[in-house]
Length: 299
Image 1 (cartoon, helix red, strand yellow):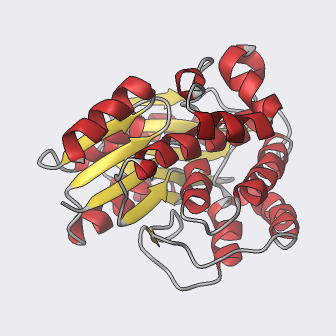
Image 2: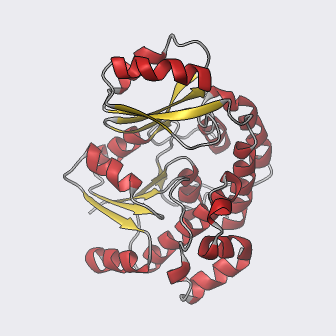
């Protein structure tokens, strides 16, 4: 058995996340160091938890703790990866950063992303049922910024850009064969070249912190593969480029991963794995009950 951990991205957060693992002493000790994130995760309010600058560090902390419980019970991965924000959770779990540094960086990243773009000027659209190459060809001549933000899985790709470009792109994508185009409820065009300035601001924050060689093999969003490039170059590039998550899953499959565990609230990444390959085992670690089930089956 070869295990890959996949750490959930922003959007999966939910009030109450992590509350049922707080009874574990070592979890309580860590949560109590970040009491603002603990209280927001456990009790909300929901509208505050959903704000990018709060959602990102809260998700990182909860996901880190879910993974830590698995590790303490003998369930460890050979490969780790995460969707966008989840990449930072993966890096924190792999000890590329200390938890303090990871949370500090992600607090700043969330704030940068929340304030990076003027409201109601840019956005993101999920395109369902259309091949990536067709999407790339369809949007390449759209005026303005219109780019692929997420290669999630076969048949699900997210396009990002300014609103005028998305308004032009959506009917063309439907004409090209897309089953649906769904405008997402996000504050801006994340993972687009519109975040060039944000990437520079993030780099200034990253440079304040030390990083280590990860304990596990990390598959990076920017490439959909491992990389020996400078970690801060990778993370600076990640925020303004498309997330190659389908490629990440396929890379792990090619390396022999046969058991995937999604770490964090929700089951979106588990769905992406199943749509990429139905023959592998897929688990979701999102509360104490699900974690105990994984430990019972895999240990």
